[in-house]
Length: 175
Length: 129
Image 1 (cartoon, chains in turn yellow, brown):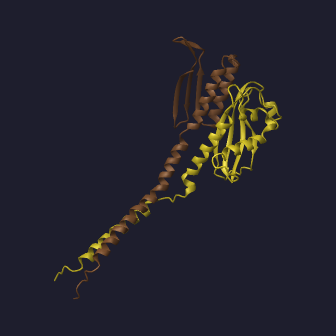
Image 2: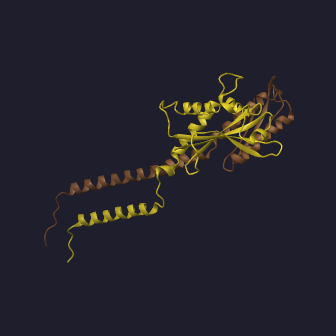
Image 3: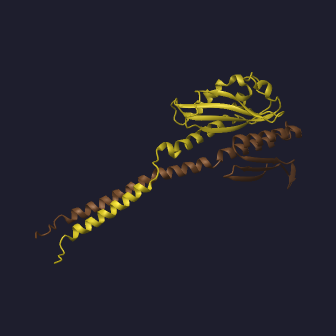
């Protein structure tokens, strides 16, 4: 004979089964596990920070004056100033020193005689191994002539003396 | 047969409600990393800084076209600098043209045409400066 006892237990069992099935669906449906490094949130913040910093460096103090970045590229010997300036602007918001931030800056130019695009390093705070998840920020810089200091071989002879536009490329990473 | 004990039903019901609440909160936390990722990748993929940089550079060039950059050969060399470096290092097809000064409604303007296309985003601008 059928009796109607234990209805609540039956209901509980059904509800628990539904919860288990839904949870398993969610777990099995997650094909990959996201770690904070995969989500590129820090990359996005670093890119914004780097772009803004380069923009600040390429902004002249007054109309008609030359910007700091332009002066650094134009007088190649003065390039340690790049690190001071870059680090200074990067920590502007927090105030504290951001010592884990590493960067490697280089200048790309076009050789008009052969049409080649070549680069020479500007400054490197740490050797870039290629394994760090670095992001790249760039800035166009207009030069009136070839940089005044002696560029690394063979760029002194390769780089035209004409008025030109070069690209300053900075790799940024936490190391 | 022993009777089913019906006491404590409210406690069981409350436990259900709370557990369902925790379950939905867990879904929210589970989605937050994915949402953060899509947002960050969207920001990274859109070349906002690239285009603003290019724009300021070309506008700056247009301002010196009449003073220090009058030679057409110099102008075309700088044009090639920007177009070829952008193609090689930024994977972007860039084209720009700067017109001669023209008088529109009594004022002198320079028309700047700017095209940028990196395969994902295409931006075109015509500006009178």
